[in-house]
Length: 67
Image (tube, rainbow, N blue to C red; front, side, top):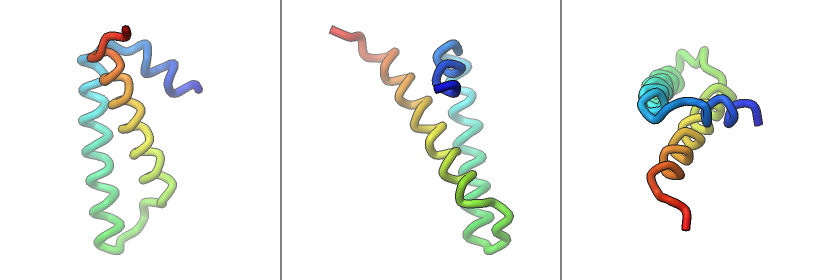
């Protein structure tokens, strides 16, 4: 998966900043959908949510050492 390879190469502070960016973007998309201006497609909302989940997974993997 190309996205995961790119994310794995990033350092933890960079991942934190990307996570904040994606969360802001998701908030904007949800506001657009809720207001009915709906220029945001549901696909973009879905991709943003998945990217947030990917980053959070990577951060959790780095936080918890494997046994």
